[in-house]
Image (cartoon, rainbow, N blue to C red; front, side, top):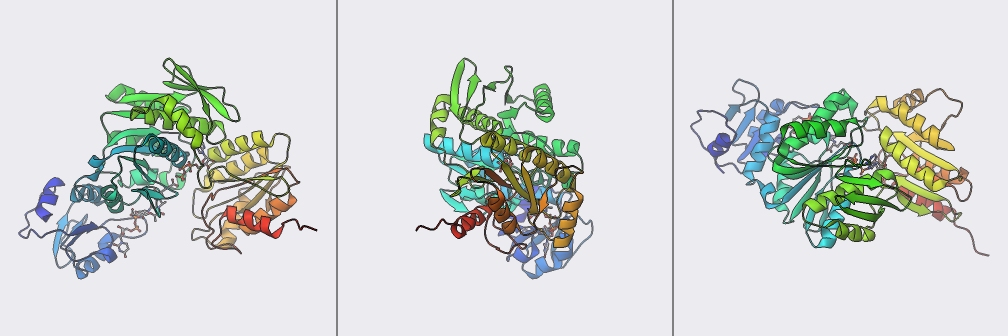
Length: 484
Ligand SMILES: CC(=O)N[C@H]1[C@@H](OP(=O)(O)OP(=O)(O)OC[C@H]2O[C@@H](n3ccc(=O)[nH]c3=O)[C@H](O)[C@@H]2O)O[C@H](CO)[C@@H](O)[C@@H]1O[C@H](C)C(=O)N[C@@H](C)C(=O)N[C@H](CCC(=O)O)C(=O)O
Ligand SMILES: Nc1ncnc2c1ncn2[C@@H]1O[C@H](COP(=O)(O)OP(=O)(O)OP(=O)(O)O)[C@@H](O)[C@H]1O
């Protein structure tokens, strides 16, 4: 593609003489290959304008930056909002690959992974191929691809859309992805709003700006595209009302009220009732908890929008095999049930502990969790309070240091503990904390470990490169009953 054609698409006015062939697009100077177009971006950690010389040294054909002065030895083009332009340029360069697919974007504080797995399962059993881009992994052309971001950077994202030959692409869309324009240059057929609760305030500052960011996903819908909105919670209702007043979208709500287009009732341990128009069906819960009845309903509604009858989806979900680290269960030799879950927000922890305590009934419930360094500090006290409320014993440990000093994270964790007669136990090493809970919990109890799900431990533990489930399995092995 020629540079001038690309600039014209981006509506960047310029009078340059050269019109070099652009061989690729990047915003990282070290990834520049000869003939690439480099976008200089001012980021959180670094300023791409400092690397323009390096980009030219590596063979950049041209650079687009936000400094209104000629920088470097080659073709430099001034433009505003290089983050947005990078995404638009990548989409145009790869010939708008979203057009090959039916595109689903899923956003919300919690439940994106769960809902995307449920929807993908329905699509597959129905015989539709689908890609999945998300936190646990990306899945393209029936192959698993490692995921470093929930919503990848724009160039990676456009390459993935190009590479995928799948009929549908189901994408988790994070608020970071929206805020950083990673999804610009994509138009969605359907978008799902799951919920909005306390998280990421270190990044968004206030719930209001977090909401405005999340709701922006719906401006990427095509004309008459479908908005599927959970109307539980104030933000879902607000989004529904905002969209109803100013768009020509098909808006479907789901929730616990009869006024919802998809209405759920009688959520039990194993099943719930779903009502849509004149149809009433009993749905077997693919995962425990009322929140999963809502996630399931979102997936069923999305599938219906793609032409899959509700009764079929309900049938297909009976063979759903679960999701790594989302209410993943293992039973110990002494009858104790262990649940590994990814809950890492106050709402997530509250929802999963409610489901776990229903499971436990009168049996003791032990909860092991910790916090990630350098992340939203303001949610921590609330999470500990919720844990103390539901659990017989709370064992606090460390999640990931994420660049923070271990002692500092422990100090911050201690400071987050609310005054209460019922206090948590603190055990620094995560594996030790898990072993402690498994040993201490009487036979036939329930132990829930939250925060990391399937992720491997990183820098902080005595058993690095294991996951919570690995630690539970290691405990089982070490405590095998001996046969006489
Ligand atoms: C805070 C944040 O989100 N940062 C993301 C952002 O980085 P940035 O633009 O601030 O980049 P930067 O590191 O400051 O560098 C600025 C520019 O200089 C360039 N540079 C830098 C160094 C160099 O040698 N040469 C060079 O050209 C960089 O390529 C970049 O263009 O854009 C990058 C490319 O898209 C992301 O990789 C990076 O994600 C960081 C690593 C990250 O951890 N992000 C997390 C918080 C995130 O995005 N998470 C969400 C899920 C959240 C959730 O729901 O839990 C996700 O979608 O994954
Ligand atoms: N609808 C929901 N409402 C509240 N909590 C939920 C909901 N769905 C899932 N959770 C909780 O949140 C945890 C994370 O779920 P999931 O991975 O599906 O969310 P996510 O939005 O993809 O999170 P992330 O983007 O951080 O990976 C689950 O393990 C569960 O404890």
